Length: 54
Image 1 (tube, helix red, strand yellow):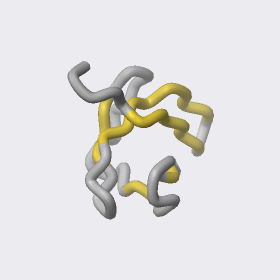
Image 2: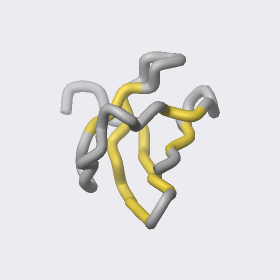
Image 3: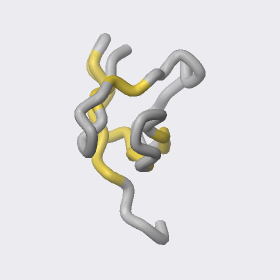
Image 4: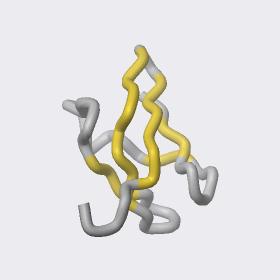
């Protein structure tokens, strides 16, 4: 699966998150921002920047 960070545009390593589901939170290893998974579509994962305090 592939996810591109919305903030820094780098690929996010999802190898440690093999059981991702919509609503899960992942952290970009490059910029440290938290992303919330919004869509999982075969090999592509889409996410939005998670709101602070959620």
